[in-house]
Image (cartoon, rainbow, N blue to C red; front, side):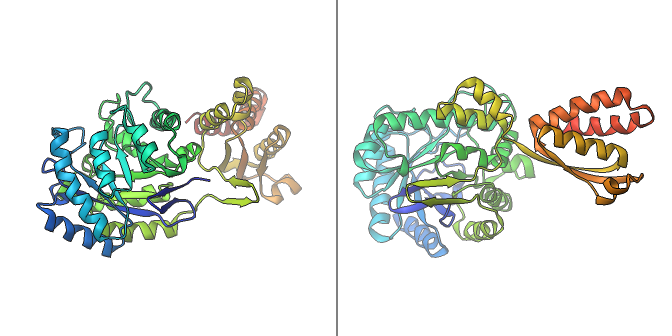
Length: 410
């Protein structure tokens, strides 16, 4: 099951969606409202966040936004972060996450009381980071990071990069049950497609990350993709879009959300959590089972490859993994009867009004096709033949063929 511990805080399905409050010590940060002027203002921000229901606090000393020139030396980042981590961990009963890719900063922060490291490079930026996390017993948030090879399916690319980071973590001996993954919303600015389209597709497809079997953290708060979509040029005007994006992330599978606005986000998360339909998980004895929701055939094939299934078998079985429901309206009744027969012959099914089958009556009806991509593809082949030999029903067969082909192709 997809469950991890972040400094003792359980994250994953079966637990409330966690809200991580972001506080920054970096004046360069893209959203000035998250920046603490001094230690006193920082503690006020944290106290407010915890009272609002934040489950953890994410502290950063150097901006990682790809469009901000926020680089500072490691010494300066450490100087900013350590007093904050020490004060927060000593005053509040919530885990502190240090947002850094530098091992020396992370080491100092863990020594000061931090429970986890949020590495935006996914263990790629500093070769010592993975060993440090493993040796310290800290938790880790691994962000997708690296060059994009094929931008046509953002989830496949993000999952590939996350899998590589998880491999590095495994090689260093980091306990997988102390790892969260993050698709790095806002960081893929040079993917070959507009970044706001990329980010929207990532949020829509979050459940497809489930095959990595790690809880997903998402950070959408006041980011630029919201500005592009909603026409909000500055971070200060993006709170409504942030809440909408956070709710969408939760509904689509996120187990944790990072935010600059904990009070508002906690409320949005609780509502989205009540609305969403979580995948079913259960265990008995040594055996556990997880329902996989929203996967494509490519996703299933990748999962089977990881399981050690033969590539040829993976390709064949992947075609059986995606079950579709297609509701067609105004279908000629005789054509509906043929569609039902062909779907049954292929191993699928088609629901049609009882009267249509019993009486062979005419008119037009609604039908519900149920089957895998492979079964519906066989139906398409049969309908092509029926179009050729359909006589007076030729145009009716052709209409059904065209709409099904469009859906399957899309």
